[in-house]
Each structure stands twice: as structure tokens, then as C-alpha cells.
Length: 200
Image (cartoon, rainbow, N blue to C red):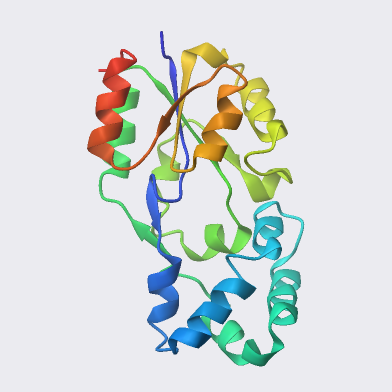
């Protein structure tokens, strides 16, 4: 029987719309591609999610990745409000699950600046029962440690948990612990998959 529902955040409880965010600055396609390679597609981005780099250090790393677009990098990443987009269903869904008696947690690769700059989108964090944001823990999905830490901290029985994430690699890592998993594509499909696990 499922007792705990664990949500990823990006593209599950809120949209991680980095492409649209950078596009709003009016950069050319070439510059947009260079920004992507220097930032979200780089190792530095993952290390920032891990909390291994400060805000200043990650900016320096992005600039080192492509010094020719330093101006654009500093302009677009000084404050990233708008990179995360609110999903209106997030808070009602969490409330509904909790009213039915389920514990609701989050488990997300998440950077300090996103937590700081996108608070208006993260209202749902006030309604969950806890969870892990990677930058605070110095470990990221799909590393085993982040799942182990969640299970131990909240005294969870893996087989009584379901984890919703949009990335198969993160789900596969959770499944190794015995956690049930759902590949998230949209809320309606997820609700249907949850019903199959007995979550009404």
C-alpha cells in the first residue's frame, strides 16, 4: 500500500522553461545555443545543483565555458525569476493527496538561485511534508545517496512510496531501492498511473 508520494519539481510541479526564459532576452539562435552549452548543458550546472559551487563560482564557471558571451550570461542569469513557471495544479494536487492521508515529499535537483529567485512559483513547498533539495544536501539525482538520505530521514519503507519524475534515469535509480516509480508526462496520465497503484 502506498503511503508516501514523492514529487520531483522541475517539469512535474513547476515548469523548467529555460529555453523560453533565455529567448525573452532577444538573443540570436547562435547565442542561445552558446548560452545553453555554457550553462544548463554543462557540468557546472549539475555541480551547482549539488551545492558544490556558490552563486559567484557558478557564474565564473559559465563565463569560463564561453568567455565571448560573458555579457549575455551575466545579463540573463543575474536573477532567474521566470525560468521556473507555475503549474496551477500543484498546490491543489498536494492538498488533495494530503487530505486523503498520504505523506507528500519533494526530491529535486535544485539550485540555490532557483530557490531564491523563483519563490513565487514555489508556493507548493509550503504544503508538502518535507523533502530534499539537492543544493542543500551536496548530492544529486540519480546518485544513490540522495534517495538513501530521503528514505532514512523520513523513515520511509521504499515499497510504500511512489516517486514521480520526468527523467527515466532518476526513476531507475529510485527503483533500485524498491521505490515504485511513475514517469511523469502530464498530470492526468500520472493520476491514472497512481490509481493503478491504489492511490485514489
